[in-house]
Image 1: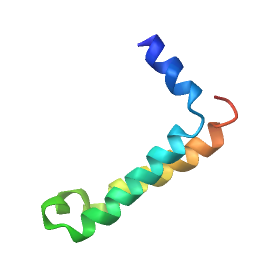
Image 2: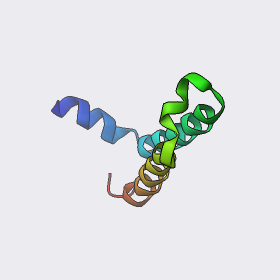
Image 3: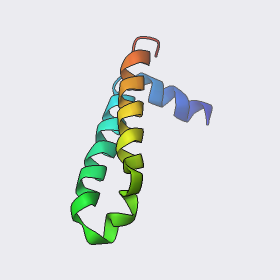
Length: 62
């Protein structure tokens, strides 16, 4: 587990990219009926924004 976390720390933009991915999945889920269970409350969108902005804030620390 420690090796995995060290490798993730080497990738500086992993948190903003994962936040962007969550936002894109949320956008796609609005139009695909099979993925509609992800859209109530827009929780996936909010999680993507929080992860992305949090990733920008801690990017210098990592």
